[in-house]
Length: 486
Ligand SMILES: C[S@@+](CC[C@H](N)C(=O)[O-])C[C@H]1O[C@@H](n2cnc3c(N)ncnc32)[C@H](O)[C@@H]1O
Image 1 (cartoon, rainbow, N blue to C red):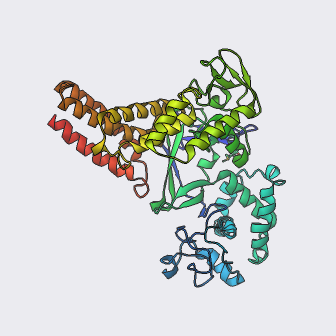
Image 2: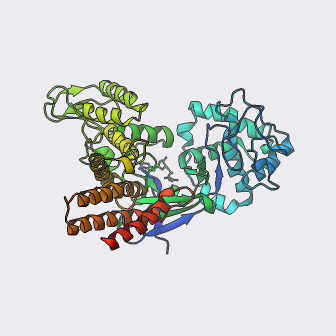
Image 3: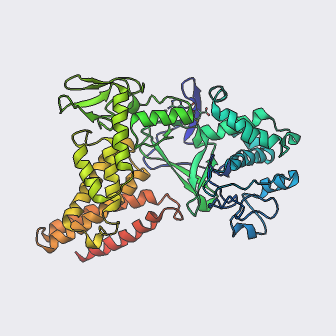
């Protein structure tokens, strides 16, 4: 029996419901993409392996159809991803037009993924009818947009004109449907060489969005982009399954804008409705009037609503808040220097809540730096910085425990980052007699617990794109040896 059933209502369209109680970490289902191809408005890439390719006259091309392939793929005797469109381009004599500039966006490639969906439809009509045709494409919301006009010219006109797809019974309406389905439903994935692609999965795409999801998915490029879906938390029978279509680490204003522009809906999840974002104050600013209250949106679903201090009731226009946030973001965007990040964190304490997403993003950059960046690698890191990294990881985890609760990849990665400074800090404290043998042992066991939780979650990833999966296993072996010695 499937762990889910599909239901439908006017708020969500189709959605997934747990058909029984699901355990945290329970495997739910797998999905193979209906089609895989380049992302929209992308750089020029190889149509077989998606690595970047020079789009100017000096770039390598397919001998048969003249479209971009990398040097290695151009020597293949048979294609896999590029095979079908290659025949279409060759038969219709549709040549690739070289780009004037190697860095230009390659709009010509926008037709590739829709074309792959259309060609798969011809040989897999049953899956098309059952799984792709019912997918949401938001035609009525897209039809008057500039993007629709661009797609009409760039994709529909091209496929029906030079590529002569009309001769195969393909219509403009069908092509627009496919473009909409891809825009609303496709998932971004990485190839084994870490190049970006989009994949049209049909099962998980039915799940609704929430900014506090209860499922996680891992796409395995080394296994035909097979997707594995699991529950991150226990889910009661009859509850909705949610994935997240945007970034949980963005504030409500940015998440709402992303969902409206890309997926054409407003999210009404518990987190979006709450100005404090579930008590985290992830979007709250400090009041410049009373200096100690938090300034929150009076209506997080309305990007133009005023922001009000929860202590002195001082009001600020949405415009003022957006301008301040933009100025702060611009300031921290360019530099990743540890000293600058640390001093900005201190400086912004008077402007932003310590849990604000800008603060969290700087803390996350510091976690990436401490232990890894030249000059701050573990072997040269003083105890003070080890302690600092532990505190930063714990701050970030306290937020992830709310927004990406349970067995999520984001938590796994942060737990991994946390275990190393914990071990090193305990070791150095033991060496200078600040910890007894028993206390040291307890610290090591706690670090092992953290690392093991991380390893269990990372086990679900494809090793070809997740190096941490291997590192977590090796670190656990090392830690077990250390514990046995202690
Ligand atoms: C990937 S599809 C999900 C499946 C879709 N409901 C269907 O019937 O095919 C995304 C679309 O579902 C709807 N949707 C998903 N999550 C939603 C949410 N939290 N609130 C409102 N609509 C949502 C929106 O129309 C969105 O554009």
